[in-house]
Every structure is written in structure tokens, then in C-alpha cells.
Image (cartoon, rainbow, N blue to C red; front, top):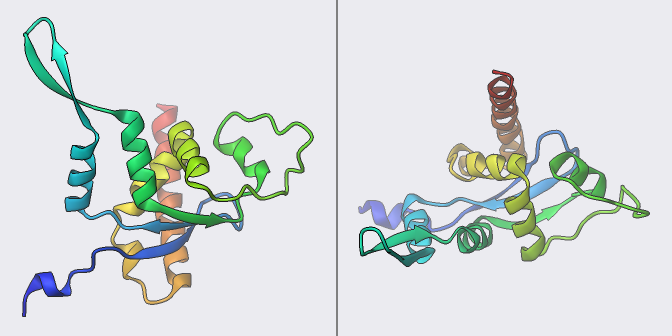
Amino acid sequence: MKLTDLMVDIKTAWIEFPGCDGFEVEVANLARKELMNLRKRCLKQKFDRKTHQAVEELDEEKFVHEFTKATVKGWRGLKLKYLEELLLVDLGKNDPNVELEYTLENAESLVQNSADFDNWMNEVVFDLANFRRESEGANVEASRDVAKESSLKNDKGSLS
């Protein structure tokens, strides 16, 4: 038996975002190998005038696009009122209980502009426990615990 025969390329799980009741994100795990390939695809060559050498630089905009495309597979329950907690928005006369539909463009905007969502995604995507559970409900519960711990750590860190 070979380990490579047992490995799974991709697995998704629905995980509830902490503090936003009913907002669940379908996330895909990101294996180390895929992360390295993704990063390589987002490198660009830049000429450094001081050293007269070509230097590799990460194209952050492309990285956000590729990372989001690989990891955020969908969402449900993202009410407009939750956006006010995640980033600066002006809802105007929009009903705060209306849900924002999932599109790759919306997901990219959320990852790029919300530090809380981006940090949560990075923790959830690389935590194998979120993808080991047999049932969807177990995934949601496990991720809530991880996210709550993360929020507590972030809150403590921001106070110091």
C-alpha cells in the first residue's frame, strides 16, 4: 500500500463563521503542495536597479484571487448586516437582512478587505481537523471552537 494512494486531493466542508449566526462558508482544504504551487504561480520578476538583479516578488492581487478561488467554494447566510462587522460598508437603503450572494468576485473582495475574514480563512483552511469529521455538523462545531479561540487570541493580541 502506498501513502499516495490514500491521499485526497481536495475535500470541502461547510463551516460557520463565528459571530454571524447562519453564515456558513464552504471551504476547501489547501495542501502544502498546492499552496506552494499557488504561490509560485503568483510570483513575478522585477528588476532591482540597485543590485542589477532580477528579484522575485509576490503579486498580492493575483495571490488573493488564486487563494480565494482554491479555498472559498461558496457561502450561505451572509446577511448584509454582517458586512458591517467585517469591513466598512454603506448599506444605504438596502435591507440588512438580505443575503449577499456568493460569487468569486464577492469572495475575493471579502478576503482582500476584511482582516477578520482573511485570518479566519487562513486558520480554517489549514486545520486538517475541519476536514476529518464524518458529519457536516461536526465540522461546524469544531470550527466554531477554533474560531472562538482565534478570536480570543486576536482580541488579547490587539489589546497589548
